[in-house]
Length: 253
Image 1 (cartoon, rainbow, N blue to C red):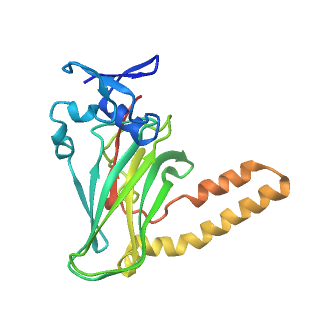
Image 2: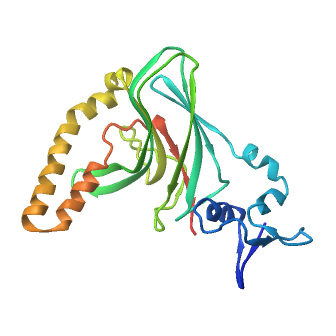
Image 3: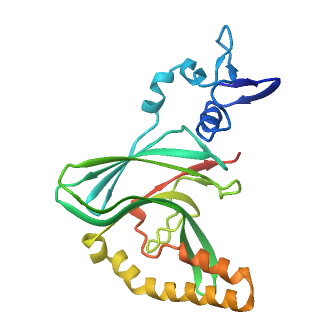
């Protein structure tokens, strides 16, 4: 469905419903602009035009929910958009529910993660890097069946790698995939006792030392390049469990 928007003397569009929804959420539209699509007898405000679309009331129901078991918690992810394109601001409703046993967590977070496979002298290596991380809860104790609701909104880079939302098989150790995903994490004893948690415990101090070294070198030689490399290293996730990833299907803008 194509939507046309009138702002003063400016005509905008045609736009998709997802583009209108994004412009309302990021402030590009104030809501009092006029909008029209085929099937309307007159112009309406852009803040209400989405409600006039066919099956508008069933939009959320048509978008599939995704459920993940993450070290004692159940994450339910409800996307707010039917499709995702490069540069989009995307939103998700997140429900975290405690499983059968009490969960005591230092931190529960969700992040937008980029995965990238590169060729090295030792073969293919996959790096995972957090581009944005939202801490949902800190120092929390959850009883069995207890639930908490959150929102997660993030803007994708305009030139982000396109992907079909499917994990590349062939590297079972890293769960290699080129593209983007939502990564869910619960920092608790169960995670720390897992193989991923133990790997993080060993490698993280080393990586932190490298980051500090790069930052120091950058300041010493007056180069931002070293500091930027350090920042990229700092965002890398070492002990990533691929079962805690919701892979995104991203289309070209």
